[in-house]
Image 1 (cartoon, one colour):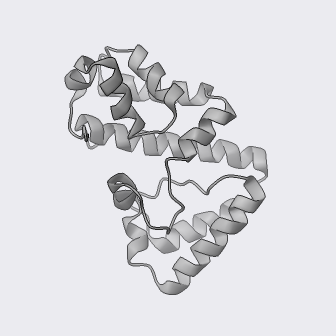
Image 2 (cartoon, one colour):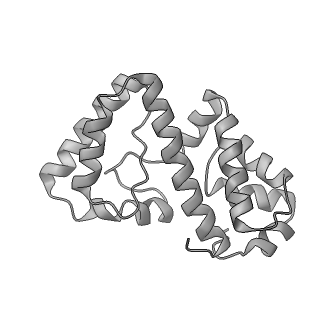
Amino acid sequence: MTYDGLGLAGFDALPETAAVESLLACCTSPAWARSLVAGRPYPSVEALCEAADAVLAELDEEEIDRALDGHPRIGARPDTAASAREQAGVAGAADTVRVALAEGNLAYEEKFGHIYLVCATGKSGDELLELLTARLGNDPETERRVMRTELAKINRIRLGRLLGDPA
């Protein structure tokens, strides 16, 4: 079931199971979703987004890995409408960029042990490749922090769509 455009009041009124399900479409960490549902009602969309950021910051690495499981590789065939929207800039990328992204993804995963996650919304294939190349120079601890920041950005965009708030 899709919940896009639900509104904050609609989200707060959902039965617990449906509310968790709606949040799992934003971020596939069950602990994140359950924690946000437990915090209802929220006085504003911003309050929900701030809670989402705070919960994400406290998740252990295993739970972060669950969140990463909900994202395809940059440049791979998107498996959800949200991923397709977010990676729309890659669709028109030159074949050389797509090949370089695929190769970069593999190098990234080998180095860091998880997928290259970036808030791709509004970025071209060239921009995403440039970011990937730069991030390959990070040490694992720095990169894990960067990845968590990118995940928080993606979660905010998806929460905005869920609640019908484009901001």
